[in-house]
Image (tube, rainbow, N blue to C red; front, side, top):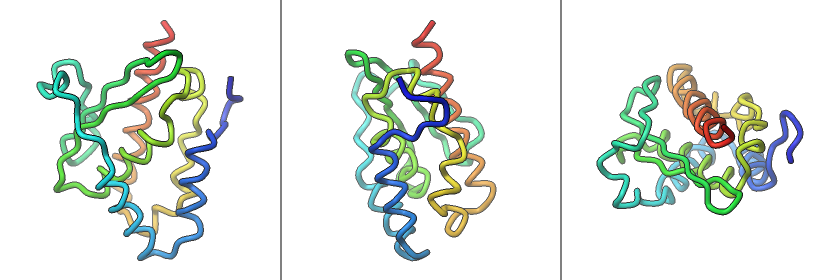
Length: 144
């Protein structure tokens, strides 16, 4: 089990990639991740099982499920919101396979370490922080 505030290894790799990038490279990385967001499974396309992240300017939906003991997160984010798609892909990749407790231990301020304030507005940063909060709430539901 991860300790409080622990950043999982895959997410740490992504953070370090952003840390060593300049402003333009950060934007390119975010767009690369946006292109890697897995398509939404057919069974979730109606959004009835998904939770909308209302704090985001774009319609963002998230759904968490357990595969074995690890979590998998599914997102639906419009292609017209590439930075939000990119962040969703980072979270889906960086938190994939973690237990619900490990997801809950991920610090919310890791976004600052990535330097995303250099490429995103404060309003967009609030929205993407909300995505992690929704993921944690769903992880908590899987613990109960």
